Image (cartoon, rainbow, N blue to C red; front, side, top):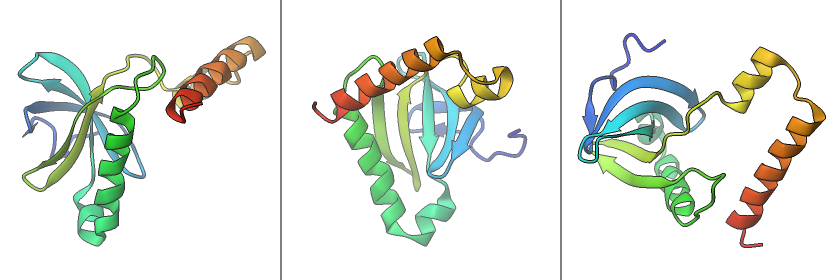
Length: 133
């Protein structure tokens, strides 16, 4: 999946990047080790292509980190660090073990109504907390 990934085995701001976990519109997420504290984290890296295209992507990326860092809730990942290191923009955050909801749905199919209700309640609680409700 990431055989020629330039970030694998690199150290970015004290985080050793180990493997690609996934990717989305605003970057790739990797498993990394925070060397100083010897803990696994998820590190999201903004692709250089987006950085060079438009400064708006950098601002949005860093605003995402700042906003998330202001919130503490069991259903919202904790942000540990964010910034720029030698031209690479990153967000280091809590690593959540287990499959994503997307992967779970692809592998198992639709959730039971009880499972879907539990997920909905968890998401609604996190959103209400994040919005200060």
